[in-house]
Length: 455
Image 1 (cartoon, helix red, strand yellow):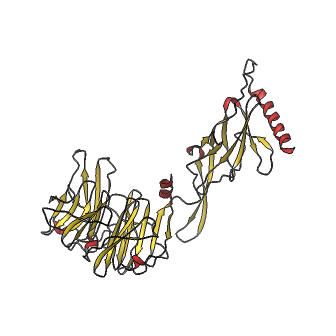
Image 2 (cartoon, one colour):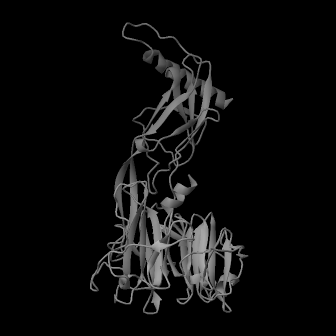
Image 3 (cartoon, helix red, strand yellow):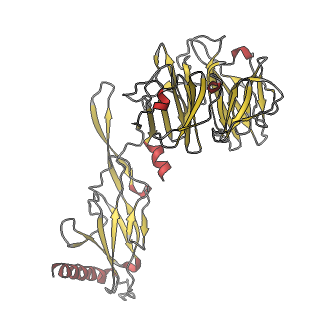
């Protein structure tokens, strides 16, 4: 009998409050309604406490504020749920919250106590605790109906800008590879490397189970691997080949002999010919023509090469290709080139351009063994091996002009990688890191990008 009594008391209190609210200036009483529903819910200004570590290693916490109105709340009228799909940032104080709630036809809104069945009328000036789900009761203005809503104020439990790694089970297949390359597309990770004088491949969709792919009787084939439109291309035994599943390879009959695949865009393949010319093909490698360079080809990287291709930010109708590696004519730093491939014929340059640097440029990309390039979070990440150890991870956010070490991106602290056999690849959200000899398989992501993928 306790709950009905307390609910009745709450309802009577609400009706008394409504008596004054429903009077207009001319003292006429508005028409009462039998409908009960919450129509809007929003938060006011919220405090957020952020944990930081100074350059000396000292911990500190500082307070800032965020606008709760920037985080929209959904109202599920069928299941009587109120929630924010876009969670509040980690460290947001939801124990002291000001909120605004509206009801249909001026219905009365009461909040259930956290420790009992007592209902309280509240105002926008009341500080409320939403660290746990809370119940809102709304009563029709004529007192004939009641609806109960559960309110969940969601807060991220992870820091948005933190990069986290998780380790998968060690793979015997990956451990047996003497050296390797990897690409990610179509929800799967493809890894090719050399084993017993042949190129062998494996594919996984979860990092745990690996399926063998067709062997290629060429120990160097894995070095000439790139992907365009979910098709893998390789040069094996002097012939250009392609596959869509890694199980069946098709030889491409081409009019020009190419010795090294260099890069790809949405519509084109790029390769070095046997007579050392940069070539381009727009028909999947069947016909080739010489591509244009703004510098002598001797400056072009021919060893430890890697590339990325991303949509050009200034337009939706062009690709931006970044190619980097070691050139015999450049010492100490990587040779970095770019090319814009346009599709809307707006006059953008369509040739390979050397991004000139000097050897002592502190923001140049250093020469790295087995260079890895990955387009990630509106930038490009690069790492490899320098002086026998894994290098720092470098990032460029200006399309390859400047490369900076970014402390946000670090190799896993417990990574026991083999500097002679490793590979990395990304699908844009997850980064995969693999090591021969040890068979380690790591998967990492920036929390913010993982949230966006789930949403």
